[in-house]
Length: 82
Image (cartoon, rainbow, N blue to C red; front, top):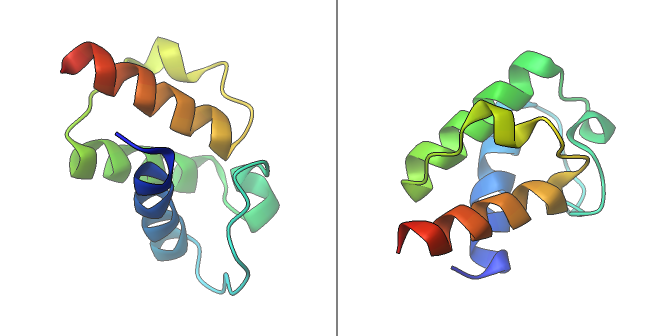
């Protein structure tokens, strides 16, 4: 699964969860940089997991620092699932 494909799904859920985002999503930024609170982040991650059909254990998510880190996790779990 390509990074761009995962980023588009994350973008979709970020924009859906945090109204008012008009700028291009930068994967090096944190979700909080876009105004997402902890509940928004849970919804973004959950929605992305459902859409991509990839389950990541919560313990694996605790060390993620930015959107790029989340993309890396999705890629890692997508390859183990395949």
